[in-house]
Length: 94
Image (cartoon, rainbow, N blue to C red; front, side):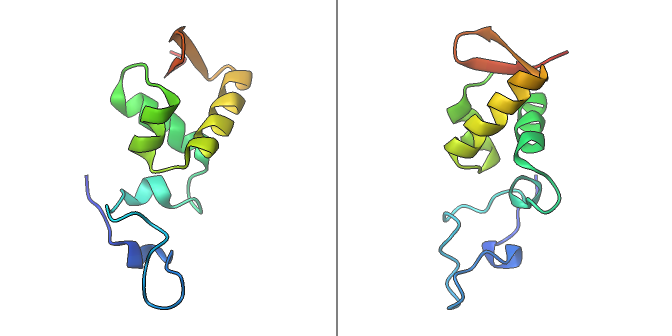
């Protein structure tokens, strides 16, 4: 999976230091919210991993904040797009 330096994402703080992203570069398609919203990012991670995951695991893989993952997962659950095969773990509805 290709990664892109934080500077190319336009996420810098304006003084040349790109401190708003952690030191690890994240895949472009996970952090470019102009193209993909949080719900789509959560679903993409779940589908790609192919196994039930916790919100913390999804946040780690997607690069999203945990609170954004929780909000997206609540919406996905309400829409019936994800289901929980066991407590605190989620997978996309087949």
